[in-house]
Length: 199
Image 1: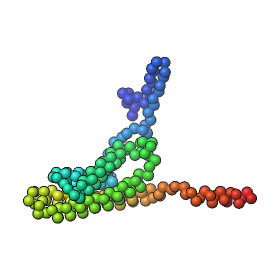
Image 2 (image 1 turned 180 degrees about the horizontal axis):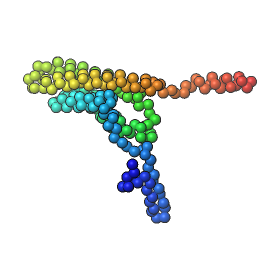
Image 3 (image 1 turned 90 degrees about the horizontal axis):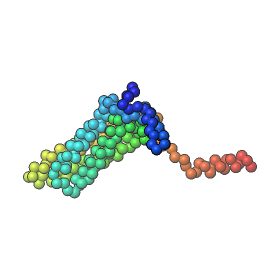
Image 4 (image 1 turned 90 degrees about the vertical axis):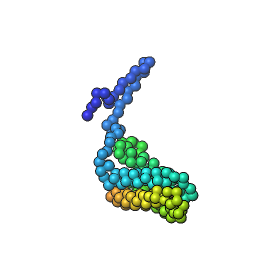
């Protein structure tokens, strides 16, 4: 649908020079509501919601020791997941020429697997910190908040694990090919065969 307020071609003239700017329909950013309704979209929303709860619970009180690791994993994975969610929601993966050539199924599979592993470690650290400091945390009122952080960290781990499974299935369904890189040993063998054919 053409919008007269946003024409597809704009002509400008400055100091005798003429410039034409043309936009194409393929480069438009569109809101992909169907992504939110899909399993990967629902999982991303769950990961963002539970990850934010982990982040908020740990950050609500002074944290020390291993909880720095928990905060690092929670905040970093939350930001990267949010960025990826926005990319998918706005269909930027498909509309941006630079990133549309990436194997997004493989990237999502590897990312989800790594975050699952890191979040599992963070959840164990949070649970251990909460258990070891239980009495002192109970006296200060921090125990239930830290226990909630540990519980939600395990729930986020499960969500990322399920996301890894579905991303892997999607990658396998799309052909499941790893990127191939030319090997340095293949070229000399081809050159040797060409030399044998000539001589």
